[in-house]
Length: 418
Length: 189
Image (cartoon, rainbow over all chains, first blue to last red; front, side):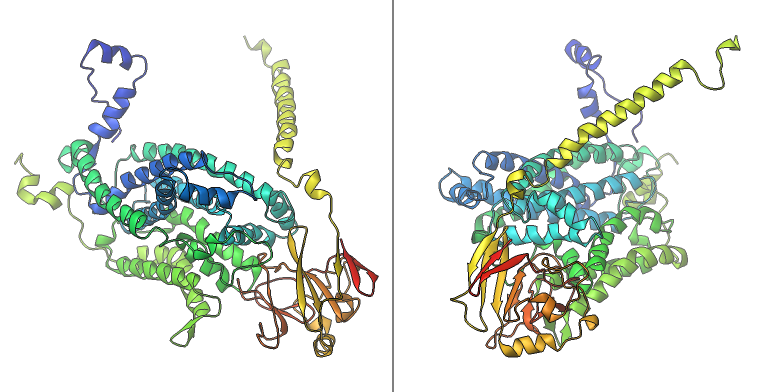
């Protein structure tokens, strides 16, 4: 849908700019007239919400960096000083810390939407893969950021995550030492994590640019998963989707504000209000909620190297999804069998998250959670490597509408020429 | 027309390859300082050693001191704990190697190789799985099934000689280099 540009300069000045730096043309074509399927639902508003989240994190983060001290002896106190002394420091820090959780909440909805409606399928494979890259960068950024307050959970979370590299045969320990810049997590580690935590959001912003650029070549997928066939199937992005995005963004911001103002430590861990102590590990090390499913996979495997491989493989798997799905139909709306496996997958992810949040030897209803995590991990892999290819071949999809317009407007409205 | 085509390559081809190769080597050489700066600095490498006074440590007690940024376990074992550790066949263990910095790498994980003086077990308190500090077992609060340590992060269990017995950790707890200066004083590092 990146067809010929419809931009018409309205004045001599605009024409002068257009022939030198066609930025107004770019904006006109991408956020004004861009033809967008007319049937996008609420789940398609999360792209805009995510852009907002990135903006919030960068703005609040730049401000926090003005007051934060990246030094093992002073980091914890500087964060407390932000909370108590800096004007509105509490608000900005709570926006930043809760903003990370809201960012991940939005990205998970965005990803599950892509999975459900088959948005990763041809010709949108690269959009999906770039998205996976953004997700990985987000996890790295969130991890670095979580270390900065230098509380107990910061310190020990960093120890556990960086120690994952020691599972690599032969060179593993050298890599961990290289990451730490010392024989253990310490001042050197904190400083480099701060440097990288400041850098990565701007890399994410650049990759988001690629994500949107790639999106504007084939245009949006839609809940029907069928291609746009005529101008009747689309509406201009502005005002239709700018308004729709803004409306749902407002609802999202209300939820965000609820956490910031009424439950600012809801996602946090009380242990992180204790300064880091290298001699005492907290009884239960728990990562932030958005990493729990992977953490549960790691813990469910009783072998160090295999645990790390299973956890890393779960992420790498995401890259291959476009080629693992063999179905010709994109949207699960017309895939009765796939729809059920999809929801089972969503349940497996939540179960994994729950298992990761409990202590290692916990049990529910007499079932050790480590076994629940094992079954759920198995299903996670099976979903992508077995179910996705096989169901695509054996399933009989439901009848697919002839066009978006026909589905939305009915037969008569869709054929006005006759 | 085609007089300039030479099978073996032209001067220009040579210059391309040569400048490309020199540029590549230069780039790699310049990359190294940017990679190596992340390794421990000379200050961090200046290996610190500490001396631990053993007199206040009671039988059955463990004290934790900080050594090179890590916790160091100094445990005065009871005769029962020593006997339990000595009764284990090193070859039947998940990790049969001693990991004792005072002994050759190939030393077996017998109790004698783990604790030169049976009463004193000195270990680096870093779980070999993902680096947490394992909890020591006491008669009042047993940690794990083997009377040694339990790592609460991911459930690795160590016996009374600090050897891995159960759980995801791949190796025995490491024994640091140490020397007894006297009967009640040990130098670590």
